[in-house]
Length: 135
Image 1 (tube, rainbow, N blue to C red):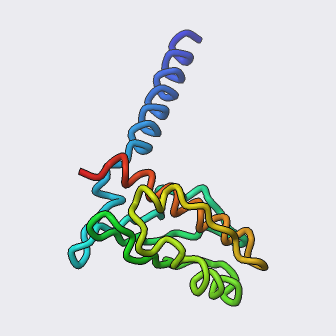
Image 2 (image 1 turned 135 degrees about the vertical axis):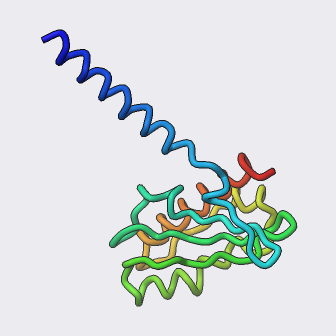
């Protein structure tokens, strides 16, 4: 019994360590460069954040410390309602400094509440990560 318990403990410890290392994602996986801008990809940062039908990953483009634009990545949200988010929500942070954008209070889009909440959380996590990891 002692050998079996010892091996089980070892396997559990190894699994926990693997999860810990996976959660410590390097900034290179999340922050990249594109056309002279820093691009924050929230796919891995907010993989647990779901809208109405699933995750709502984004790319946040930052140039000289200001948000240039935010683009939605592939998702399975209802196209009719997500179009409202693209039109009325994603531009709310444009032109703001990263610090101001991170503190910006943004209202959800009526009719697309779950999706809006998920997008807002993606932006929050992306900008928080950027502020902590930008060199």
